[in-house]
Length: 28
Image (tube, rainbow, N blue to C red):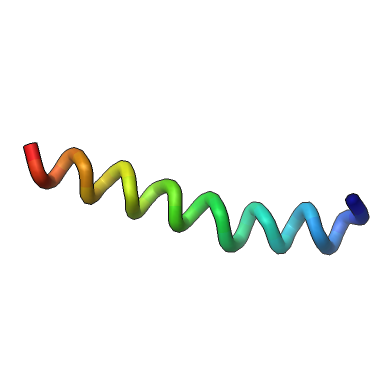
C-alpha cells in the first residue's frame, strides 16, 4: 500500500475499533 492508503486505513479502522472496544466495555 502507498502512504495515503495506510493513513486512510489508520484514520478509519482505528477509531472504529476503539469505539467498538469502548462500547463492549460500557456494556459490562
